[in-house]
Image 1 (tube, rainbow, N blue to C red):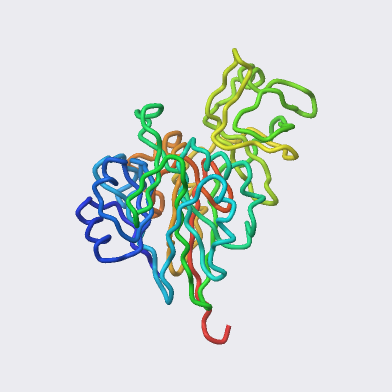
Image 2: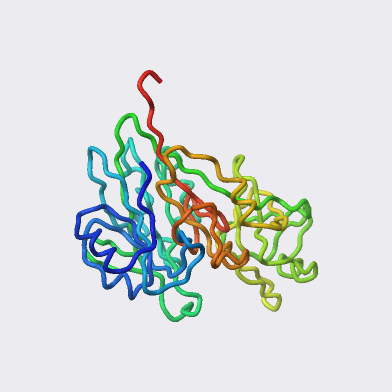
Length: 334
């Protein structure tokens, strides 16, 4: 069940689409607009982990072929209100790939409220947040594409529901190389993509002033234990003048965060963390903050390929994390 996951030319991508295959695509907006309609969903991004290593290209697109079994996948689009039905609509036996455009209403709603969506955590959900070339930030909006209609949108999300046979199961997992650094404990009284006032070791303080005074390396995320899994909140900007810190994912009340410990060798640590999977990986993506801060351009990450994203989805929104999906089949007699 090894999936086709490769950075290809536009002509190669078009041929795969015309053949009727079900695909998840990632590429620069101008490249995606040259592709025909078909059985695909996509999102904008020009950064990739390819077979040759980390790559930035506006001319090629990354293709994930989706294995089809007895039933064909279903392609959908969601607005901010209907997105809460993403897991309710998912197949009882199967999984869903979700692509959300960064900075839009679906991004915010999913990040802050997905834990309360109906059937969340009951059905496998994986995906990513579409972005743009960093030179285009503020000039071009990230977009998703519903390939069956050719519609591009910076307001909607797109998804593919993939049914699986009764003996085949989808497994979603993450590789997060960051661990709490053992420093001060930070907590928040509200949910949001930014914060000022907070509690540090139980005492009221301002996070921007704290990070400035302690010369915190903003390449390191905040890390908290979310029910046994270490989850990162990437730091976008520290505005001391306005006493605010902006994040790439929301912080939540009731959790204790710490600044992460540094990772000395990202590629070597990643290779050590990746489990051996007999059937390979069906889908994966990695974070643009890992790509930038760990210098992944030209470096291979243990053969794992996929888009480099503005956020990763493993049931909920993640930062500075690799997420992957693999399929397992029960053998007769098990």
